[in-house]
Length: 212
Image 1 (cartoon, rainbow, N blue to C red):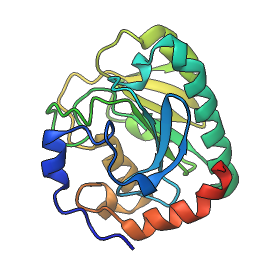
Image 2: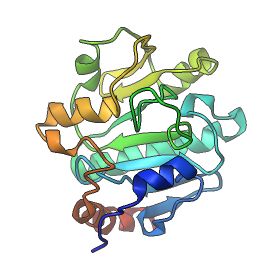
Image 3: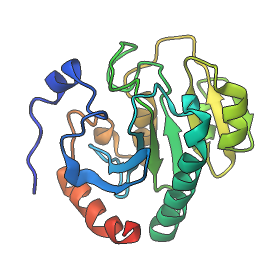
């Protein structure tokens, strides 16, 4: 079992770890323009990320020419996680600057990465208690309307897609924090501190056969 990455914060100050992913054993699938990686600090088993190979700011800012590839990969992951774990939601912090720290700019945050989490909850009901959002029927519908929006939160659950444009500075890892709280695992929200390698290894063992 891999041990904790002690210099993670220092690494993120210097490089974008999504551009140069050092723990390649966490990558379980690649396509021409994307790779799928098991998240550090998985809140639950099966927690994946879809990451663009190119340094693009956010998923709603993907170039049109690679959008179909992204949507097909997203659909594949949805089907796998739903089959294996019984549910799947998606979210992204979308250049709000809150994925690592409180509203600060990090290259790592500003690299398109969609969180894919195998849970079956109405996450928009939870986020909607604190933030005002705009609802869409699908990712593509959202993309057409929001691709020029600089900062946003994207949440997709069983009820559909909602995009939030918070004006206030969000707490760090806002969506991870809210999900951990909703699932009753409050100690797992900070992926920098709680890297949870045993759960990463279980996820790789369970899901890798589905991507061969």
